Image (cartoon, rainbow, N blue to C red; front, side, top):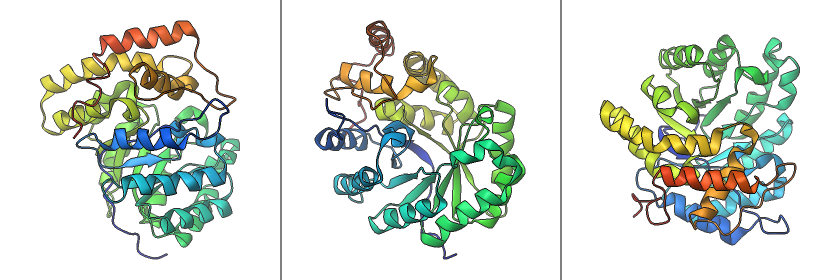
Length: 320
């Protein structure tokens, strides 16, 4: 394995959405506008594409490739690009990683193959091989996605630590374990490694508490809508200013209800709807099997956005 390129995964890293037109084709113009909008928020550290927020499960390989090309064209080198590697094939994952590097990506977000849900935690050599294929094909730094415990895709802590030992390209984990005790233990033990590994939280429904445990940043689809509030909260926590952090969290909390109420599968659909409400996106089409929220839920999102003080004029108040 070659030496991974430099990228310091810390701070606020929004995961952007993927707009579609009425025929469910990728709306490139809307995607470019969305990228530019999020990238204009002062203080973000990078932007993640081809993740859950972008409905990567429903994107073809060609569409994922084009997303990289388009993203780099919009962002240039002003904001680093993190590319999701979402596939059940280790061979395909290697090809995707090599493609991302050729197109100028700055880092990879590696998802666990779904096949691991059938007992992969009992065969850690499977994920070792998956990462070996990726790191043999690319020198890009890696953010490893730690899934919720209930998904059967989470890496047991000994496996997670061994992955970080075997693959120095792993610079951070995107943690969604969903367990506060494990979350804190992971943060501490990853920091204590000979080559410390950072933790980027994606526990957006309890973000203040998660950041206060010592996370190095956050990587979340909610950043496609409230990156300015995330930056402000992260800075307040880093400064040890609890009163300011609590005040910002009070603004964020209505968006937690708007995005993360049950069923969780609708979270990114709801983010699209809010961007339409705020005049930041012209339509909120999603690809099946995802479906549009009901009229009653869209009205709930509108009401909660008002409670959060989100208006078309204030969403990106830190924008250049």
